Image (cartoon, rainbow, N blue to C red; front, top):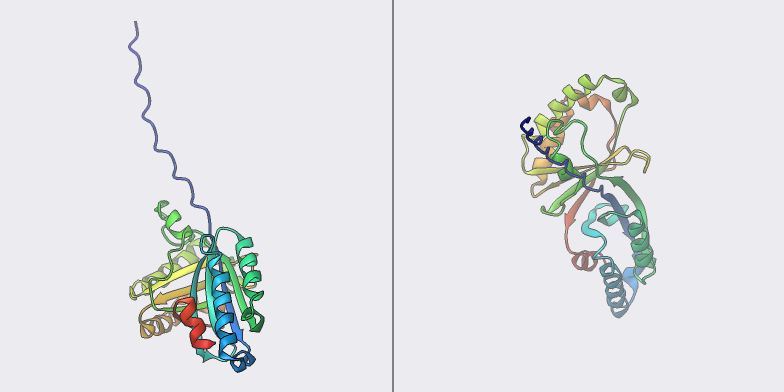
Length: 243
């Protein structure tokens, strides 16, 4: 009688890919007429705005940043993260229906989605889930801007692009105090990427940007402006500062 053959060893199940997150940076400008209202009206308006934002606390990650005094066209912005585009839509509608919201305009807004990098961690698939889930807000300052590469970049071979990105990554690794969050906008918005750098040290970010200008890949940058520098505060602190 033949001996039974041992069952083949079970192969580990592939880890399910984490769902991608949608990302929105929404920029706001407050009408100067708001500051001429009576204090009681302004207090009530801010309270109503905060209550409207709180309704989305279980759906949307919201991090406010003040740009007050830094740029003429923007007073603050919200970094919003969710798994549904509709959450941004519904939250924006709720905020603009408040008294304070009726005095706010949105000079700019960036829409993107998390996605695993094609140049980083190519040999470590486990890192995919780390890059599709954003963990923001551990630093005081945020520097955010839209980013587009030239069409010539995409016509280079994968090997040529990888070599230049390896140099880019090597330079970035020299600045461990700066955390990069890259999200993708292809087909969702006008830019191709939205890059958001977090740090407690603005001078380190400045030095990083200068160093990246000297890399080979920088010659394929088509646009990387406007750049917004934000100071992280609670939403209440932000509104008290500007309104």
